[in-house]
Length: 327
Image (tube, rainbow, N blue to C red; front, side):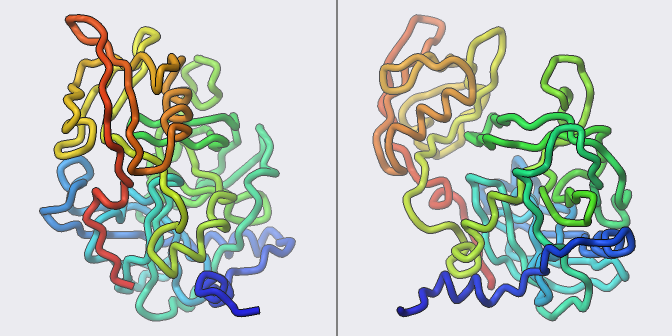
């Protein structure tokens, strides 16, 4: 049977084996964490909101220099570098970005000659499990924590992780930090600081991590093509926040589908395709169930004069960005 390009790329990634580890092994695997620096051109779509100079952490996941990080550090970047645990800085290429998971991939231009982190299974990581959050050395290094909850996370930027990992106490340098289990296996990548890590309204601060189990199904495509293949979700270009039980539009992306359809900040989202929405996660699930990117989406909105129906021709989020793959 012929081998597809995607299968060939997966085979070419020499991922570190997830073998049982001693305490010394687990500590050594934390040396896979690197400092990531990326430069974004002034004409990028995200320069105004995320800045042109971005810095955080990433994790080496193979011996050739493949670095997994959080996507907002490198999306639309045209230059990148990785500083290793031994202090060496290597230039890196932009490999791939996935809006749906939030993962980003870089690759150093030469093999790093440093340990790579084996991938664990985030699905088997229970609440209350001890973990290690590891940022690069200049960002505070590794710090112990506990898993506080496993639950959906809905972000205002049309983003939903169904089984996000919430930890506490918080690490101050969470962006792209590696979440490691007790055996030194990588089980998540740092995304956010949150104010309610256990989800019970008790105000315990912590971090949200994207679970590593979302990576293997898309890794080959991200390396081969720069993004996952197959149908894409519809993207509207609106930021929405829950407030007093309602979904308020807080920002509309300039030049995006929602702006072209007349959606404005201050509008309240009442429903999708005739079905009411309960909360932000329910809004996204109904939006994405309405069709693939390119389909027309009907939103029911409320503004200062009353309710109105708008029809929005959605797009693929990746097509709106000015992505510059250099690998």
